[in-house]
Image (cartoon, rainbow, N blue to C red):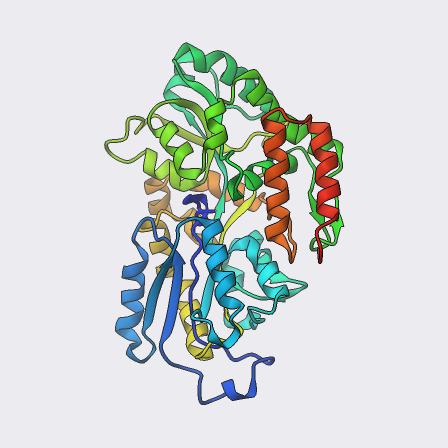
Length: 423
């Protein structure tokens, strides 16, 4: 999630701390008197530093609704911890509007921390269709998509060109090239984000989804992971470490560490968010001009990415509801969404930007990213997603380190997911 993703980091979690928002379910005292006023915006570390200029534009034209920026840690797990601690304070919360990781929407909505939003106030029809689903819970809109993301397979196009082989479309092709081509050039084969944290949940879910499986169904009410597809997906990751085409060092990688290994010229293939392509292609990078990007491979063809990104949500106890809605509309407008991409290196939610010729020339991966987003799936939806993710991380890590077989890992996943209280 680097935006959170994304994202960088494949995931960037922007917690926009905004004032109260008037809906049909809002408190009576949030009516005409408290609709507009100053806001507080919190964000998980703005790694590219673009957000300040975006907010300067808002503050210059909305002097009575100025936004104060609060940056939380750039780690998704730490940001989640600080946000939930604050939100449990009820009307003492510092945060008015939250730009939350896409997979926190269900959790925050079920806890009553964010409020439903009217669909007709936001340009949802202009967004890439899958991203809107990440902002809903039990059929209601609880947030507005702000940044999206999907995993890509980055590869050394110079190396593959020398070997006369195309980028891999299947796991079999990826494994073959990682085992045979990479060593010829002194490279490790393949890496993702395999440290036991949220990134491993994402990588594991993508492997399961690419094999045709799922982890949870019915908004988390049903455990579906005990399947041949899940065994195949987890087996793919475990086999890579066991056979050596996934280096053991990759078990310590998060987004930034894995990006750096690829940028330093130590990897043939890397699963990461699009920001890694942008940074590794920048002037002065050892691999600038040598990078290609394709959709993630699967068992028999293109696989399926997890949908990353962040959504803007309004704190139930936000102070100035109308200003909150107006800020969300501003941040999801076409001009700001263009800045999200050009200044922040983050994938926008506006569909038309992916077909803009000027942007495609500047960001050649956009058509590939659009395809990946349109075929991506959200992480398992659950009001107890934090517990779901911890279980997935722990069990899949045990499988990748050889402490249990993929078959045993899937059985344990099913048992532990079913035992989560309140799931």
